[in-house]
Image: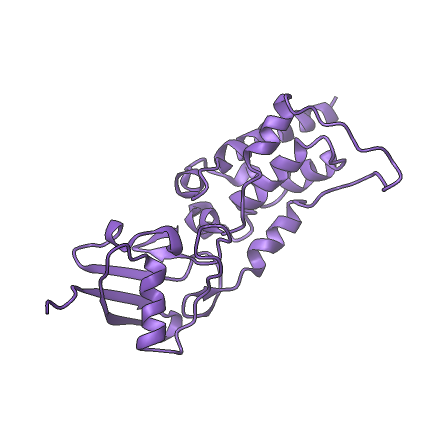
Length: 238
């Protein structure tokens, strides 16, 4: 009987350092499968997150050879360096333990960017009309599939160098709501994203768009915010 090929898996575990594990390689094996094998067969104390395993929840995002990825949708054969791979927690977020990060700063920035619906109608009012063919609706729909996985946040070098920067996911959400006919907080959103840590801090490197697993374009959303905040500034100065 031929033995299964063995992978050299380095798992970065925060302050305690990194550990190397020998993991058997199988066909159609994902990075999440590798992490799960280590936890189930070698070290039950290894902490990590996952839920759906099919690319719907985003909770399994980790750094794989320095690149943020959904580990449930990343086949290990696609990321191996020889027979080795390094897996770590998402960067730009505090590490709770091992591969699990604290997502609070990420979601706090959604709130700071006014990435929440600003309604003005009650249940007694008629439903606000939405023109599905409008350019605004198209812009709003472009980022609607964001699932808050924080891959773009981990990929962003501006976040790495400026902890006050709101980040691509929060700004993309702000852009979505700015273009939503049902949202009545336009000026509130523009004020939030034009201040300290706002859209004008973006260096337009584009890592957010390059690494988004859902193929969204946060960079385009941020560019839209830059245009609209500039227009708002000059209108107020008249």
